[in-house]
Amino acid sequence: MTQVHIEDLDSIDWKIVNELLRDGRVSLVELGRKVGLSHPSVKVRLSKLIKRGLIKVQANINVTKLGLNLALINVEVEDLSLINNELETLRRCLRVILLMIKSGNYNLTLLTAYRDVRELEAFIERRIRRLPKVKRISVETIRIAKPIFIPWLISLENNFNCVNECENCNLRKRIVVCPGCIIRIVARGDK
Image 1 (cartoon, rainbow, N blue to C red):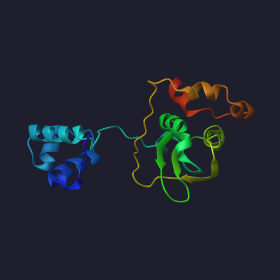
Image 2 (cartoon, helix red, strand yellow):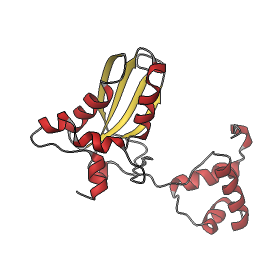
Image 3 (cartoon, rainbow, N blue to C red):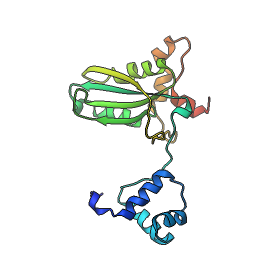
Image 4 (cartoon, one colour):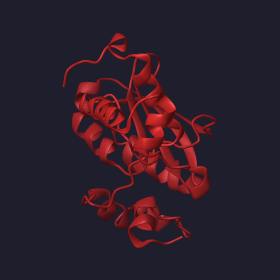
């Protein structure tokens, strides 16, 4: 995919993007009216923005409405090249909303969702502390002020190894009233 430069977009492209950020379900006719283009012209521009990989029209989730809490888990790993497989597992994990590799005091940051602090503790013990060469971990509970709706792919179409792992988790067995894994809740449709 070719790089898109900010200069490649004109004011109409930005208007289209902003209108879709306000309401991703707006009809092409309405979108055209708002940006001053015909329905076919908007469709061509929108298709071009999507094809270039600049935007993706998707549903975003209000995590607070689901009764979930959020935490930023900052991790310092001695050598990130040693955890490529683990990064892929974390990238696929339904609990992980955002995974960042970065510079600074911590070189790995995860935005995660949890219902109960015990669930967060189990995730940290099972997934994060087991990463090779972890030097330190910092956990911050957060509330997102903007945006309220965030992209979070909760997908059950793949088989996740962590479902089996959770069922056999010693931490889960030790906790008398285990809140369980968020994956199990979504999979069964429990509340």
